[in-house]
Every structure is written in C-alpha cells, then in structure tokens.
Image (cartoon, rainbow, N blue to C red; front, side):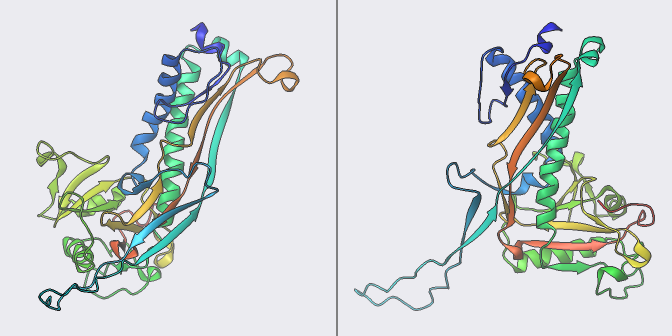
Length: 331
C-alpha cells in the first residue's frame, strides 16, 4: 500500500494530545494512533483499577494526589440554639515524579518495499502491546510494595512468616481469600460495585479454581460488566488474571512466589494514560544527512507515567506458592 511509505508527521491517538504537520489525513492519524491505544488496552490490567490523575500541563515534573482524612464521629448532642464549632478536614499530599518511557523500531527500505503485510501497522500493533506492558509494569512494581502482607500457610496449616519460607505447597485457598477480604473490610476499604478485586497469576488461578465455591465469570457475565482479564469470583472478590502478576523467585530453594494483590477502590493512582502518550512514525527521507540514501523509516511510542499508593490500607498482598512454583520465573 503506497500510502504507508510516505509519512512525514507524528501520529497520536484521537484521545491523546495531537501534534500534526502536513501529509496525512486526520482519519489516518486517528486510525494508526487508535491502533496503538487499542493494542495497549488489554495489557493495562493493573492500571484499570487506579484512580486517574490528569497530567500537570505546565506544572513541572511532579504529579500530586490529595488524600483526605476521615471525620471523627459527632457523638456530642447539639445544644439548642448554639452553633457547634464544626470540624476541619485533614488533607495530606502524595507526590510522585513523572518519568518518560518509550521504544522504537527502525524499518529498512528493503523490508518496506518487499514485505507482503502492512509493515507500519504490524509494528504499531506490537508497540501498542509493548507500551501497555511497560506502563502497566511500572504501576505493578509500585503497588506491590504495599505494607499489608499475608503469607500462605503450609498444606498442614503450619504458619509461614516470611517469603523465603514459602514453597509450592503454600497454595492459595478460599479461606485465604476470605481472610484478605476481611482485612480490607476491617480497613473500611471501598469496593468496586460491591466487590473487592484481586489480580493473580494464571498459575495461582489454576489452584484457586479447585475451590468448590469458585464462580466462573461466564456464570455472571450476562448481569455484570467484566473487567479486562476477569475470570471469576470467590467470597466477594472478583479475580483478574494476568501473566504480568508479580513473581519473585525468593521462596525456599528459590522457588516462585506469587504476589496476589487484593484491592479496594482508590487504593492507588496513576496519571491519565490518554495524555502524554504518543505514537511516532518517521518516514524515509526525514532524517536529512543522517540517512543520505533514504534507507530507514521508524515507528515508535513514548509516554509519561507515574503511579503511587494512596491508601496503603486498601491493598493486601497475599504471597503464596502454586503447582507451578518449581518452573515459573521472576518477572
């Protein structure tokens, strides 16, 4: 398709910030920009449960979230005709430095001229997935540092008190799910449409599906809109499966230990991914003397991102082993 060989501008998704020069229609800008965004969305498992914050345009490299404290109970009876003092609101601020991420691929003129498939579209698809995985991993690595941790016990009930003691037999159970959900309830963590969320690895999901109370997502999908990656529900917790759930090879004999993140609503925040994320196409002939024979074009992306825990008490991390602890590797 000849059009694919003559880009001379940067392309951004229709919902993203847009910067244009001449040479490509608005429809094509939107098409290729949205192609990147759509391929990123399935990878944004951790980001989908975050409270989003607009990018601070012109406000420096720091993003700020406000954290409001709760009011004490007003247990003193009012006196007739007397205005009470009232209560002030406690506000704390959580800040995070913005960071920029990105990647690109150089396409040779021979590949562009001889390829059967639409090279730009194929590479854009893959960079969309790469963008989603990258930004989602940044978020995951932040929220997995929460302070509330429950270690799965041994099969015989023996208590485990550290990650290094965990083995493959320290599997997640329905009882452990109920314990984590109870911990969130005790912290008054808000719910997502009446349920808590847990992000788990497929290896952990395999063990959890053996519980007789497990309710597969297809059994309630007609009445409930499913989250990306949602697989089922147990004890008031909806489970989302992803291979990007955190794994540590830090159990006994370096076996795989899985971080299962139980979440209440508003536990953490991220910057709005529709802002500051760009797909960039550079055509052959755009590099001047750096490419004197017009041999190279490129396709890439860049994005600004930050994530922060806002309410540590709304995150419970259950660390466990699984039937696959002897083979899975850290990620």
